[in-house]
Image 1 (tube, one colour):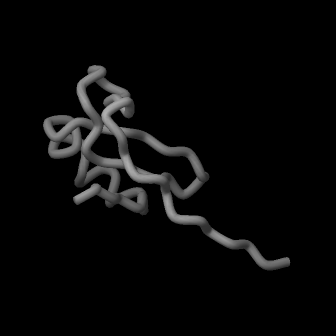
Image 2: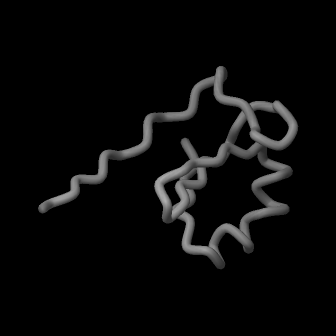
Length: 61
């Protein structure tokens, strides 16, 4: 069986931080397939922990 991973859709102004509701600037895709969205502040707070658990982090230009 082959698994194909699709790129995450671009963040839009409708995407909101899962911690505070501000505009999302970072998408964290977890190893179990879940995703979290973070504003700039919460992205900086949680970045090290997300990297430690192997989350794929992406920001939009």
